Image (cartoon, rainbow, N blue to C red):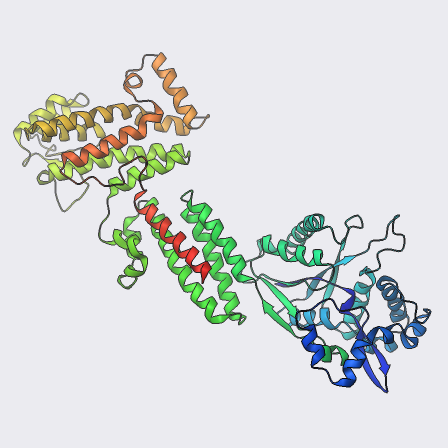
Length: 580
């Protein structure tokens, strides 16, 4: 699906006149300043140069004005001229049609048709009002009628629909013109179903030439701001020789793609400030589709292709971040090909080195800052459990089946008796199962550490029997932090599924209520705004207990593990790309 959206100006129409024994086409109004107008004039033959310089003499002379019933030499407004000309055209199309040529807008329409368009929306002015009963001298309302009839006479399968700028909006009022074009483009988008059309089918062609400078700027700016997937601008080439010969203008295609790229990149940067990798991915994938389209249209192919390669690498980096957010580290690592490791820089380090507990800790920080409390509570619970897994794996590795990682099942035949006795003495819930396991009764050879309390008791046993006073001291502090978080672990589902939902304020409200009721867990619990500090304490002390170096990420004001690396990589790449 393709459509054309265009401004139109009185200089778009040329009319054939007999001049010094030859027929020439001249625009009915002065051409506005064009970048190469002087160069075009200098390239004319002497005869054509004289005709071009004296064009007003011929337009307002006896041939045209006399035919249209105007007093010769008395300049008419463009509105009046096109009104009378349209009436004459309707009355005698066989005579007038060969003499009329919409040189510039006709060239834009011809190009649009070649790209699959069958319809155009044309912005026109009709400033007739009580204050201006004759309308504005440059009004294009009748020029639209002439163009519409000309297309039908030519037999082109192409329809026009006008968008009339309200009479109370002056053509030079930039702010109001911007407002009108914004509204009009939204109406066009809705009418054409552009927002519902797949990106491969959607093509919006724009021609800004024509109308006031304020109209040109409004159409250009609001096109950029609109949700059009593939806006392509048509730029009719000025050819004075072509106009004199009555030829439609050739058109170049351009897209302002560098400007649009900057807009996309700034949006991605804002999304990354909220760690929204998925949003950034979608924006840049859409942008890659746009680049593909520009390449097929032959617009700066090599430069656009280079930009596409850079963006695909940036997308991969954000996909790695998104996989990490979803705790799918296997998926993230598969994305990193060996030949791309150098290009991805520090982002690629998780290919060989990844810490789940650090990822969970970082996500707790992120979700708390983003006020995504349901996600925060979920990750907090996972962090506590992963810390226990880390301690069990490091200190009690020999007691678990290494062929079944994360199974956390104790086989009675290999667990030390003193640890068994210690677990029995600590267990307060379902103690009969544990006693059966201790006695090696049939069917109780395995004892699964299936909740955080059993896992804590096992870690407690491991540390007690290592008889290291420093480790015991660290563990007791860690254990106290765990207990301060127990309340929030238990309240997680209640808050998430309650009618009032979950928020920071709601957390404080529930805790205060339970403390007033004398809830033991609530009395032990830390305040909601201290949860991150307790998590950080667990993190730091666990590293110390296991003689692991403390990372710079374990800090409430530090970097955000892999996510900071991804964010920095993406932003640096995008900003560098904009400078090239």
